[in-house]
Image 1 (cartoon, rainbow, N blue to C red):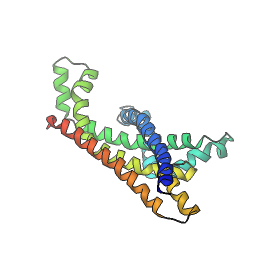
Image 2: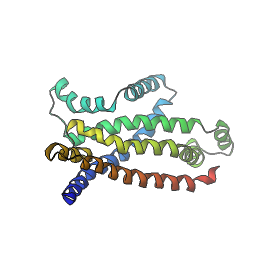
Image 3: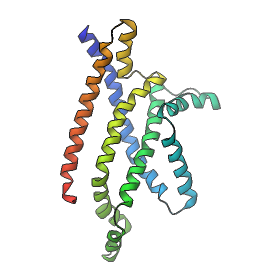
Image 4: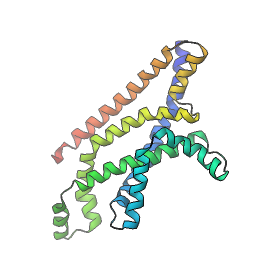
Length: 213
C-alpha cells in the first residue's frame, strides 16, 4: 500500500511541479511588464493597470480559478478551457500582479541620484536600468520574491477546485476510497521537501548577492 500511495502522490506531485514551473516561467516576465505599466507617466495606462492589480490582489485565487474555468462558457458560450490550462492562466495572472508590486517596490527603492549620475556619465536609460538599477533591484527583491514563490508551491493545491489532479487530490482520493488518512498527511512531506529545497536555493542567492551591501 505504501508504495502504491507513493507512486500516486509522485504522479500528483508531477502536476504540481509542472503548474509551479510554468506559472513562474510566464508570471515573472509578465509581472515586470505590469510593473512598468503601473509606474508609467501615462495616466490612461497607469490607472487601468493599477485597477487590475487591485482587483486581482483583493479577490481570492480560488474565485479567480472558478471564473477563468467557467466564465468564458457561461458569458460567451465558448468551450471550457482544459482544466490545467485554466488553472495556469489564473495562476499566471494572479502571481504576475503580486510580482509586479514587488518589482515596483524594488525599482522605486533605488535612489534617483544613481540614475542622475548615470546620465552625467553619458549612459542611456536602458544602460542605466540594466547596468545600475536592475542588479540592485534583484538583491532587494529576492527575500519577498522568495516568500511569494514558496507561497505559490502551497497555492497550487487550490487547482483541485476545478478538477486538476494535483498532489492533494491524490492524497484525498485514498481518504475517500480506502478510509485512511495518512496519505493526506504524507503529502505534507512532499511539500516540505520542495519548499525546503527552495529555501536553501534562495538563501544561497541572497549570499551571492551580498556584495551589494
